[in-house]
Amino acid sequence: MCGIVGYIGNKEAMPILLGGLAKLEYRGYDSAGVSVFEDGIRTVKSQGRLTNLVEKIETEGSSASHIGIGHTRWATHGEPSDRNSHPHNGQSGKISLVHNGIIENYLEIKKMLLDNGYIFQSETDTEVVAQLFDFYYAGNPLETLQKVIGEIRGAYALGVLCSDHPDTLLAVRKDSPLLVGLSEDGNYIASDAPAILEHTRDYYLLNDNEIAYLTKDGVVLYDLVGNTIAKEIYHVDWDIAAAEKGGYDYFMMKEMMEQPEALRKSILPRLENGEVKLDDFAMTKEEIANLNRIHIVACGSAWHAGIVGKYVIEEMCRIPVEVDIASEFRYRNPILNKNDLCIILSQSGETADTLAALREAKKQGVKVLSIVNVVGSSIARESDYVLYTWAGPEIAVATTKGYSTQLSVLYLVAMYFAKERGTVSNEMYALCEKELEEMPEKAAKLLQLDASLAELAKEYASCEDVFLIGRGIDYAAAMESSLKLKEISYIHSEAYAAGELKHGTISLVEEGTLVIAIATQDTLFEKLVSNAKEVKARGARVIGIAPEGQTLMEEVADQVIYLPKAHNLFASSYVVLPMQLFAYYIAVERGCDVDKPRNLAKSVTVE
Image 1 (cartoon, rainbow, N blue to C red):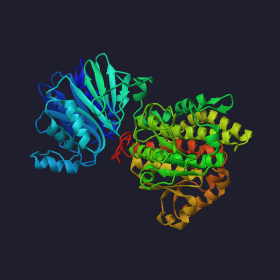
Image 2 (cartoon, one colour; image 1 turned 180 degrees about the horizontal axis):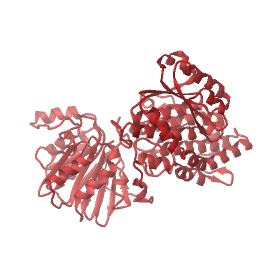
Image 3 (cartoon, one colour; image 1 turned 60 degrees about the vertical axis):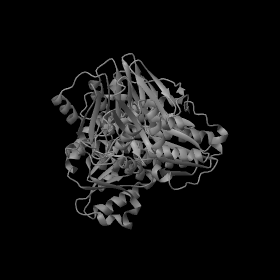
Image 4 (tube, rainbow, N blue to C red; image 1 turned 90 degrees about the vertical axis):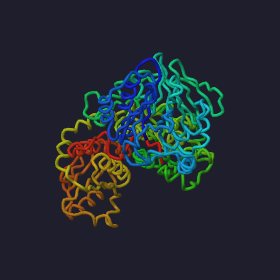
């Protein structure tokens, strides 16, 4: 969750560290801190947003330093405070360390260190690692880091600064992302590419338990026993402007408006001469024909995309599909068979629970197809097959284009499997292809509703409870729409299968309660309208969402949002767009920080 940046080279470190942390603040914004070498290690930390740290450094002043580490925190162990902020230093003052992840056996190590006279300044698990490093340190930081790694259990990305070696920066990772940037002016470590993109586009992606030994002139990679490692250099080819706001007030608005182009990149190159072409997807026709069951595993919005995928794949391919929350899948001892396929969804490709679920599937001998956005991410590298969404960088915590492109790839997978299995007619296949070709333009048209949705948001911004109802695939769309409302506007919002209203939920509806009724499915439309009437009769205010031409919704709803006409299977891609905008404008009306909602962070790399 947290963000790490580090630099060693010919340039001044402090501006690089602060600039990198600004690019990483979406990963955590409870506190921030830096350590640089200025005739010894100097550490500056501050609770709250990065601006607090910048002001503190400007007040105190800083001298030129050419090496340093920085951190922006999402709190796990210990409340947000100056003393719990990173970096954490060893008792001798020779060691400073930043950490992303969770050390599971920190209490055991802390007791040993307390028994050996160490005094702790914070409540964090990270300080235990810094003090353990200090405990073992005998002059060689590389050997010390190897010893520390042998003692700690859990997930970690570490950056280490040692005052005895001001020409060296060390880094290591396990189950938490970390890359090593390479340039002629120096070398970098970072949790994510945007932190260093201004300075370099070339980097190594560290695998678990690989140690990076950085100097200003180069980088050497080691395994745990000290053998050197040769690795491929990755190159970022997207424009740096993709990680900037581009004149928008918030990244979320920019990323919503980028969805038509993201859909074009995700869909159109994979439609060729009337057929779906899935990059280097190497699953054979026989393997697809013999598929017994598909397990879709994901978290958050990606899980909601997976539920839509279940409806689409089962309808088109006639393959049973189970959808699991990754944190449940990994612990429930899932029953997986030889001819099953596991589809893993993750925007970052580093989601901790999802990565663990992937490893569980592979441990049981099941092939894994990952659908991810970040090239070279851990999930992509560990999967048997990978399909990239090509959404480009997504900075806002609340996903928009990441979700939309995950849906688009699931549609393509469903079409590909259906064709290979012979479960779809030529007419239906051609219709689906046409629907996907038209999706980017229809999405662009729908996003033009932003002004009217801004006005609608003003009317409902004071709501404290919102219920969304839908049937079939609309229920899946309701779940994602509800999440957008709650995560950025802090309105209590719940999604329900409309048929369940009478089994308890309708008792919560009272005068003035907002209910959003989603009705895109032809065969279920009248039933959904009846459910809307039931809540209307109990005093609810109703916003209807329906396809163009379905004017019956106007008889029950106070307002209706009309969607482009589309086949039922693809309706979720259109439902979510106005709901993203509606949630955004409500959050703005309520004075919320849209890009950085409270208690949340991008790329969930801890359990």
